[in-house]
Image 1 (tube, rainbow, N blue to C red):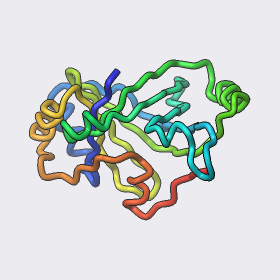
Image 2: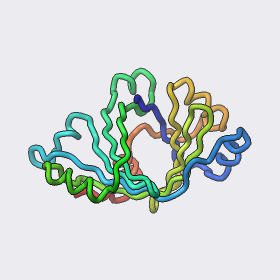
Image 3: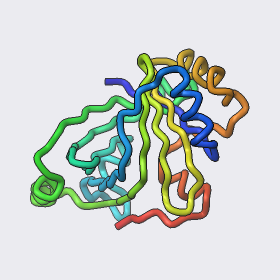
Image 4: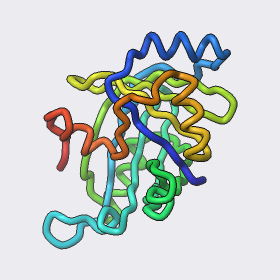
Length: 182
């Protein structure tokens, strides 16, 4: 699946949720998400998957445990001005056992993060409100195209908002927060 999204920094979560609920958006999730990233060691501090714009993550999302593989799509990002990645996600029985297998096959833990997430769904759009310790709330809008994302930005009065088109490592750096790496 091709994932296209943008992040909007320093939003008023309660105001946007009121608007989403007035459009009959469905709340689909609220809890803590714990992500652990893995990669194969490379030369020095570089890791093989990261160098090839790929990412491997295991996630605890309430009672659901997942592994996710993502491949950055720079061609789509340049065309549409969004964060774009091919994504493959599968449910696993538990993160700890799966992580043990990854390590036995040579992967190493490279980074880790915890966030509180509140998610809504409306038509094809997904709206995720993420809160990390020491970082103001942000909104992630995921849709099938830049045009559809722009529609939601207008509908939610966020056209002039602070849009951020990078991942969590750059987000932490933007706010001067330490990102847990190994």
